Structures are given as structure tokens and as C-alpha cells.
Length: 277
Image (cartoon, rainbow, N blue to C red):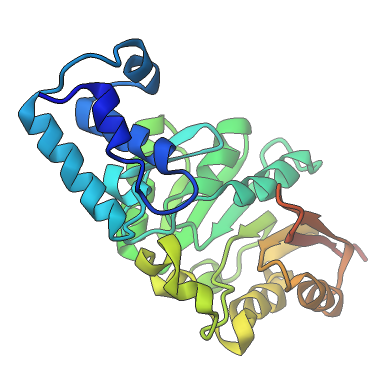
């Protein structure tokens, strides 16, 4: 029988720059234990069925399948979120958007919409920090909405409403204090689409026309009709798209336009405040 230490070492050949961490996550999932347990009991022998399960996960990871999909979960804003192949995998850079949104001086019962909510990551992070906000998550994918609703229920955040909508179509005639989105913004010819985890993520949530700017442009142009005067729009985008998004925001009548960088120092989130007459 193999020990915990031996099994962890068997994952040293996993792809990427976090092989040991990935092996730890997969072994924890196979054993139903925490990472601290692994290092408390490195000589503990593991049952044959658990070894087989772990080895199957390692094989899938060697084929490139994302760890988050293998274990069905990814942490975002300290919230454990269910994910699957119908949703993007929440990433740390998106937490920059959440941080910015929480800085805004919005009404105590602000109306907030997360467009293209996917797993519900942004909507649920905001709701967890601002119980008074009325947060809605919209998505065109019913499969993604099912994941978001499951996450809300598990986190006890059922007050967040999730609804089907192709961008603004489902909220015609309504206005909000804050609109946020992590839309598709990858150029269809970007070679990174054939590398790493994104190969397994839903292409419709990644790729946009016009060199990745089409959905960003649609969100910016439609925002004024769905914001109260002085309302905010915050958008995640590619590291080279900040200048283009800022120009869109200026043209649409936004002020206090700014771009925030992610932890890697890349321009990642742009936003502004709708002009007040």
C-alpha cells in the first residue's frame, strides 16, 4: 500500500508550475482530508480504492484537465464555489473587480447586476460583503445559472437572484447603481486558447469578436440606459485592452474613468461613473 508521502511524490510530473500544490489538492479530494492532514500523517497508508481514484485524477491532470474541474470546486474571495465545464474557473485577478466595487459609495440597498455571472463568483462575493445590496446575476447559459444557484444555496446567499439574460435583454427598462462583468474578451486567434486550462473552459465565455472587444463594446454602449445617474460600470478585460475600454467609456458619457491592475501588474479592470446632469 502507498503512503501519503509516496502519493504526493507521484504527482511531481504534473504540468504547470504548481505540480505539488495540484497533487495536494487532488489527494485531499481523493481522501476527503485537508492539506494540513496530509502533512500531519505523511506515513499513513492509503487504501487501494483511494489510490486508484487519485491516480485517475493525476492522469486527467497530465492530459491538461483543470484541477478545478477535477475536484468540482475553486475558491474565490474565500468562498468555496462549485465549478464545471459550463462555467469559467474563477481567477484571482477578478478579485480586483470585487475590491473596487466594495470601495464605491453606493446606497445601502444598492441595486447591483453581475452580467455573465457564470458560477456566480462576483455576485456572491459582493453579496457576502454587502448584505443590504440587492444583487442579481445574469447569464445566457441555463447550465451556468444552475451552478450559480447551487453555489448561492450552499453559501446561504439565496437572496441573490439569478436569471436568464443575453446581456441587458432580460433587464430592459430597469436601472441599477452598479453594473459589473467579466465578459468574453479573448481574440479568437489568440494562441493562448490552445494552452493550459482555457482549452477546457467554455469557448463562448472566453472569446469575442473584434479582436476580443465586441462584448465589452456592447456592455459599455448599453450601460447608460441601465444605470441611475452617477451609477458605476466596472469591466474586466485583457491586459492590452485598457486603452480601448477607457475610450469606450468616455464616448458613452462616463467620468472618473480609471483602470486597475491585477496582482501581476497588468491592466485588468476598467470602469467609470455615469455623468450626472
